[in-house]
Image 1: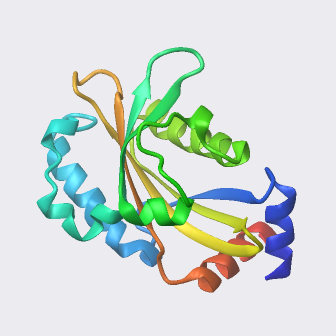
Image 2: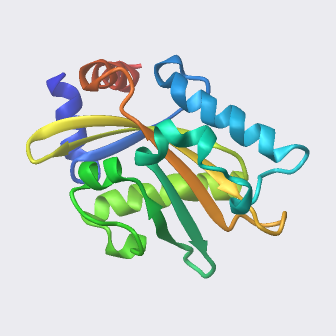
Length: 180
């Protein structure tokens, strides 16, 4: 366990991420979101934000974010809707903020990279985030799903966070993957 925490401390100032398969069994509840998103997609690469209904996601609303993809180079992202549990986990309000305003900047850079993957691929991604915060480790699963209002470009992301099976199970799995 300490090896992972040391690795986290040495990578991007206390935070690291690893991509996971979308069907990772530790985050089964996120699989339900992927199924819902795929149903809305139909033959398109992504549904529009206007098609997302809160009812099918009501048990996850406190851990859900809608992130606007802002045009430009480099691309920026603005948090448009942030669930109450995410406010607690982050320790402050993110609604209306861009990634430039997120602290620490190492966390913002990691989110930038993870969001950019979903935008570039035009497909969902699932990330295991592991970090040290105030001397305490935490780990989360973060599902990032592209949304498109015009059917051509990704203009928003639907993100859902899961605390999964618990911090120590996730950290142990992450540590094993670093050793492989």
